[in-house]
Amino acid sequence: MADEELKFQRGDLASVMAAHSHVADWVRDFEKRYGTRPIYYGPLDRDAKKQRPLNLIYITKEPVFVHIYEPPSDEEGGGQVLWFGLEPQLNEEEENIRRDLVETLLQEAPSAPSFTTDSEFETILGQMIDRYTISEAEASIISRRRGRLWELVGLDDKRIVVSETQRQRLRYIIIRDLIRNGPLETLLSDEMLEDIHSVGLKHIHMDHKVFGMVTSNIRFREREILSRYLRAMSERIGRPVSDNKPIIDGALLDGSRINIIFSDDVSMLGPSFTIRKFAEETISVIQLIKWGTMSAQQAAYIWICLEYGMSVLVSGETASGKTTTLNAILPFIDHNVKIYSAEDTPEVKVRHKIWQRLVTRDSKNEDSRVEMFDLLKAALRSRPRYIIIGEIRGVEGATAFQAMQTGHPVIATFHASSIVKMIQRFTGDPINVPIRFFDNLNFAIFQEVVEAPGGGIARRITGIDEVIGYNKHSDGVLTRGMFEWDPVKDKHYFRGMFQSHLLENKIAAMAGFSNKRDIYDEMLRRAAAIERMADRDLTHYDDVFDLLNIYYNSGWEHFDSAVDSWVGINHK
Image (cartoon, rainbow, N blue to C red):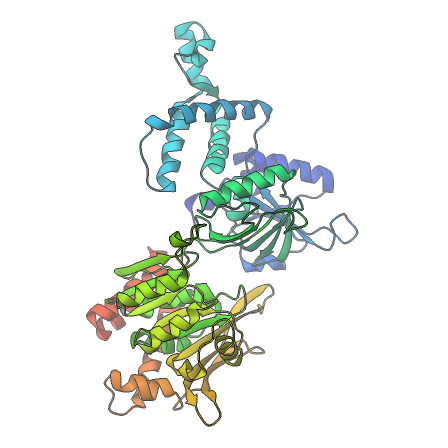
């Protein structure tokens, strides 16, 4: 939790209002209109769903706050949860100052220091704003010395007189519009939002981790403004949208996926977009265990399989958390091997020392276009230990199986809710993997979106299945379920004790076990270590990676003792 969030205690709305005039203005207007005052909740958690009446303000990233309100059924908007983004606003005078200041900044930009990241750009821009604005107190001193206040804004001095609160508002709005996400900043700053849906000029709707579907106070009021915004956003992510190419997929700077449908003759209600948000910090496997997405035994099973080069698909429906799980399990791969990743949209996050990240390139010129098939061919020539494919959608799936067949383990995500549907999709059009090749895949993880025990939504690994082999007599693929999830008890059960084809017949010998069933003791030993990590709240991705780095470079004993003595990022 950021330090600035700690200064506001839960229930202390007065302090929030005193520190942030835009929150104060909003609360006064809301109270006048609805006759009720919200409470200040602080940083949001899942217990907020129990609040009744539902009328609370929570902090996202200061100075941005969110007001959640569920009107009574007999009021306007009753029956839906309303989401109001609260951010600094400029009055007419400040808007004129903003335009003048932006013009000055653009004129001075060629002489500004160079930068390589948005964070550096933000720092430089903030310094420039401070340089070209001057407080009223400073202006008063200078005016007494010069005799005339207007000289401050003359040609010899480009500084603009503002109060300190005005300077803070101007800095926020200018940085928001030039570097961040413009009018969508309040939405994208809220980590509790998962999917953001905008259709034409309607109010934007979002999937909220705590409150389900919510309706925002944000919408575009003119189609021309919406079109300009989407053009600018698409150009910024390197995938320009146009009437000739009205549908694009890409990634925002924070890693969130965006899909834009631009043309009116394709999207009948006007240009639309959907943003699927990703957490700023990579989610660790220990965090997934704490959330109940997977169990420690499942994590231990995956760890052994990835250490010994097994190929896996993380499969499920849209928004089931496949990419999050894929990123979370990557630290289980040996830290001293070469990894290649190939993606349409860069989402895979690897901390290994030797990582080559490949991304497709779109182009009107066919010779300049780089497709997934091209990336996989390039990766195969480089002989990596693992090839990671962000998502298998089409013919590249056949290349992935060829890679497995030539001894290159593959990790990928795929859209299928069961092992049967997965096989059907891979062996049918357009992928067309021969069914007899399917035993090159070792196991598959299946994940779903489910209703959380306390309300809201959650993700669960509902099963892990091993692929045993092709059966020529039935012309089918033999599979065996290793783990299953009980939705009533919300528990994961290991059904593969003394039945795992992978552990006994493929991995045990590689791991040096003369008795192949000793591999189960090894799995349980790892599960116990993972449970200790979870008990100690070692949930940060970097902590998990660094501990596993000790395992791969110094051995089990050092890793085992480090788990008990580790001072994690969350505990410093």
